[in-house]
Image (cartoon, rainbow, N blue to C red; front, side):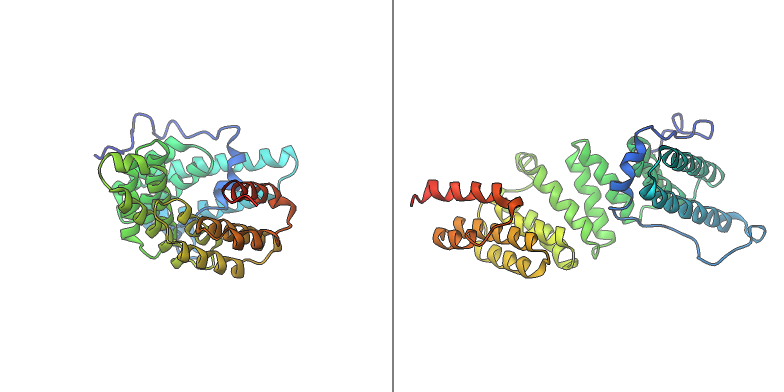
Length: 311
């Protein structure tokens, strides 16, 4: 059994996971904003009496998946305290349903994956990790599981284990931008530790960080957060290619739609110009920025330019 194996002394049919009181407040940010890979059965209606074995488990899993998504949708619209309590009761019922399914089909990896992801969404972090680790033992070929196990290790500061899981996720699904993005964030957050451990030289570390963010941006060119993080990464490295950075910011100015977003990208362009030594060009860009929400950042950049290039 692996080091991440499920501890059966802490998890059994007599002790179902209980929904914490504050867990529902995590649902909006976690359930609807992240990558959700559902391992459903066929969408066709099926008569319960015609099912047996794994097909029955798949049918039950699909029902739980559907109920879970419906509960999240209801929570989005819940206003009264009674509505929230009703959703909480439904989610607890779904948790109990997953427990029964796992006890009835202890080798069914898809059930562990769906259950583990649900537990993560409702804030049951440790139990989620144990359930997903068991799923990984049963079927080690699901990238979403590797990614989630990597997240858990990263949150606990285990950056080497996290890197291993993220790399396995990338190996399994190299076309998924999220996994490249996650690894880029890990390398950036623990940059000093990777260098101190002599796993990377400083220049090599910078190249690897930018490579991961660039791959995420290239795989999902319509996704602003990935493109924005790649452009920002030029500010994070010791020897940036400012010409390439300037090109990225110009592309983002053209890509975004709202006036505020366009001016935010222009402010980044101005900073890039300043760092290139083009303070006159930077001032020219800044003069065109008049969004109130950017006033503070704009003034900070003006002060920085004036300190180095007094007028």
